[in-house]
Length: 285
Image 1 (cartoon, helix red, strand yellow):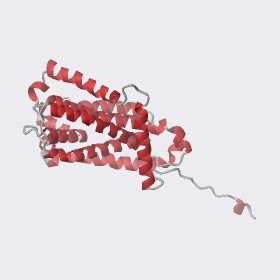
Image 2 (cartoon, helix red, strand yellow; image 1 turned 90 degrees about the horizontal axis):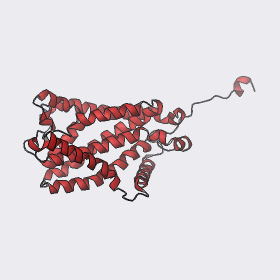
Image 3 (cartoon, one colour; image 1 turned 135 degrees about the vertical axis):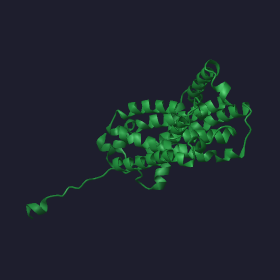
Image 4 (cartoon, helix red, strand yellow; image 1 turned 90 degrees about the vertical axis):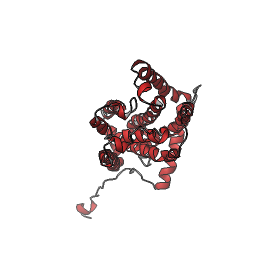
């Protein structure tokens, strides 16, 4: 046998892909990991799930006092301002906590990623799904506030799953992208904390979209996909006739195109970057 024939050709062995192992296995793992994380989050605590409510409710109390008693913005300009504020805080809390926790989730599971063959996308999506469990429980409190402030149910409440699904998809896309980028660039987590804080103040949570006299500012706010989703939730829940729809605030349906482009662009980028990086995550770790 010649030396050429004896030479062994080495080929690249790729790691598990984002959705490796089949759809059913992926969904089973996603559900199992999400439920486990949700249970572990409150295991052994005295108050259990109530701990997750304390942060948004405390923030809600402080901001409600500041904007209704000190600046008197909410109490004078917006009907049902406490409900609008609580809605915004709870929704943004889901987005911020899910994306922030997901950013470091893959690295936090380094030992499992190195030793186990499973679809990598399960890790960040499980974090988002766990956040969705918390969001669902949070809305029990939100609806209690809604009824306490005299808001009557309307048929538009049936449309809320559309807004929640849009928020979940956007959160999942950002989470997936952050988690895989953090594997290579550890500055991502710090940068995202700053960006998330900017998004909080740049989204109509503390103030209504009509708080500004300049219509240009309203249209700029509607470039943010979160602003569009949050404003639509407010319209569907509170049914305030004086509140503009996202399309009206954006200056027409065409004004929503930038937010739509950002939403779709974030989803496309997340799919592309995770599919590219997933097979070599273990190697990069």
